[in-house]
Amino acid sequence: MLVLALALAGCEKGCLATWFRDHGVGGSGPGGSGGEAPRFDLGGTDCSDGLARCVGGRVEISRAAHLPHPCTTREGKACTCPWEPGPTCATGCASEGTEIVASVELATLQLCRPDAPVVRPYLPGDPPVSGVCDAAGFTCIDGVLRACEAATKSIAAAGVCLHGCEPRVGLPSDHGDPTTLDGAAAILCARLHAERR
Image (cartoon, rainbow, N blue to C red):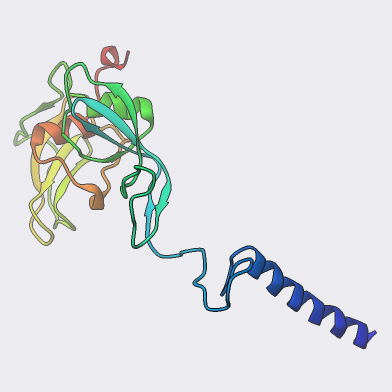
């Protein structure tokens, strides 16, 4: 029994190595020499799925993909992460190129410039804001837009959302932030229900 088990193990190892070689995994492909480079690449850039942005008045949705490194243009395809065109904003982009995490429907609403104001100035009677920033950018907590100039700086109240924060939208810190208060408010503040058509 022991001899049979050892024989099968040896065959499995040899057969598995042959299968890898024949499918281009490891040192050589079918008919190739042992010195060939492997055909798969674990390096490169992974493109995220589920992001949205507005560019030139149109919402775009990211698609998952992998770009090898180094990346060379093949068949007219650029070495950039793929974005699928979405709906057009009748009012233009709220913040050009800012990437958010949201569903397609919500992204279309929040990335387009609002028809009516969604933020007002911060007043002394509004919820207090305090703390230290982790990174530069805007957040919305308890209906208050909070601005951070840079990490370790004090958090500043930038305004109050008229209809509260939109909790289903996120601004990833590594994908750029709105450069203006209006852009941040349009993305992070909830819209009127009448505008959700």
